[in-house]
Length: 273
Image (tube, one colour):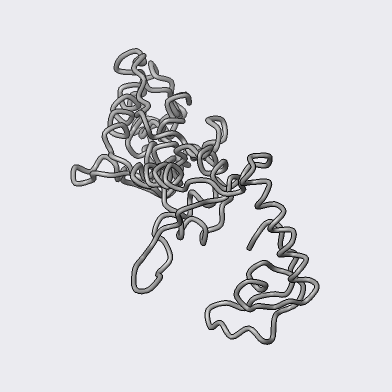
């Protein structure tokens, strides 16, 4: 549809099978040979605009699609799908499909040769922004896990932050894993800025802070080309795993000397049976 079109009602005399032309459009004037006042006015406006375009007074609304197509394909090669590009850029899926794959004409798939200037501006301004479900290599994630463990984290605690409060195994630590989702990688990056969670001492049921194996590393674990998605939560909003309350020691781990629970004993206190 031309920028000068002012469609009104469908053309009942249109005999085209793949299109329903509307009155008040340049296509209806040319292809359907309609000479109604609306179509004639649209054609006159189109010719005036075309004269201005050819004279260089007014910029043409269309531009070459090759650099735009190359930019979109580069984003796709780095992991962005057409749906993600649609969500980030705001360009409809149909326009992206015709730009990249083309429209089937006479048995051949021909991509668009031209694209509107506003569409080209939106697509060229779109940068790499992977969706949370996109998969990337697991190398950075394993380096982050090693750093967290060295600081005092446990694999179970990391797994509950990444996979949910009921997780018992960290999938990224499994040797056969070669990829990880961007959403899980974003959570692991955010855990680098969180304090080490307390552990529960088994015999006493009291929480304590584990001692790190070494000071935190100053290495930048961010992999180039894998940014955190725009819809990722900030580091302070990472889902927290509640620390369970100390278990009741009634009838459990009682002292053989006095019969009291061991949790009520002082460290240096000794009872004689």
